[in-house]
Length: 462
Image (tube, rainbow, N blue to C red):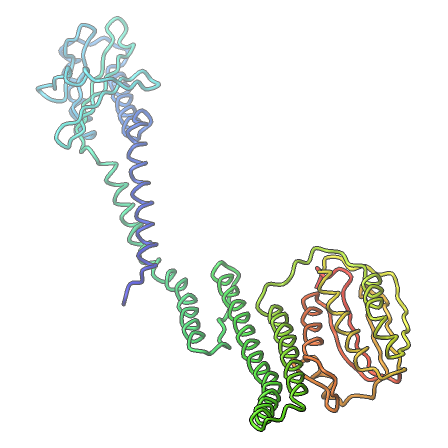
């Protein structure tokens, strides 16, 4: 089985933490020697020797010879049990009894600093060649008038306690290394799936998505990955559609210009100057139309390729509509249009004011453009259940059902109309409406063609 790099990183990090913790424990053991288990163990042994000695002697008087014989047997037994050298001295340093024939030289211990227990026991330690030698001494109050001093020397391996701790840490390391394998594989699996999905997206399959499970950081990464893939698919699709539509829209004026240019060339070759200005003027109009079309295409493409506009403004819909109606007064007067308006006082918060202006401008522009002379354009602004509703109706023959949906597609033009335009106005209005969490639709009514826009008065709330 191939070991993944992520597993190695996790395992090495775990080992680093383990080593640091071990060093910290060793340092703590050295710094807290007075509270270590060895000191407490020695303290218990000294007090046990003292208590057993006093129990053995009792209150009766015995000779020094019998005393030495009795206590020597006791100390030998305790020395074997404790794996230590034990001896007792009198007030003048004379040996009363000993577990061994030769007692160690205590001067090598007493040169070091001692640790004093709560019972008054002094404990010294000396390290030599991997062995930790401990010397403990305690002076009791008994026998009265001739108090005993108890001595104990332990020789233990230097790292006995530390080795037990180290073994435990090694066992923990082995167990952790084993259990890290399934944990790491579980972590790596969704990442590998995302890598596989990303490679498919790179090959052009933009519909690929990652399955999301759970609510941890990996699932958040998968969710962000899917959002990125969805946005990428949307932008690529929009770019492809835009390219196809642009090529279609630009082909017609280019064809007309090519024809005009050929006819103009033919006239010049035949020295016929009459009518040349008409062809030149026609080509100029086509160039102006293409320039305007390209400008609108660029503006429309920004709605897909750029981030959503800032939604931190408040817009007065009635004031926006009034301002636009004033701008269209000349067009209405020229075509003798009747304008009906029914506007309520409505404000929208958390919106983009310029975006709302573009929506209303495109809808009104189409209504004025496609209304015949002496026709009627009606605009109504109403409010219900936190929804602002804009209705624009113009006198126009009913549209086929398919056109009611397709008019919001880029570059869609109504059949049978020679009115110039780019076919991008309503498509832009729809995109901006969706950005504001609203809805836009078209329908036929008894009064004519109607477009309805519904916007939440607080567009920050979906």
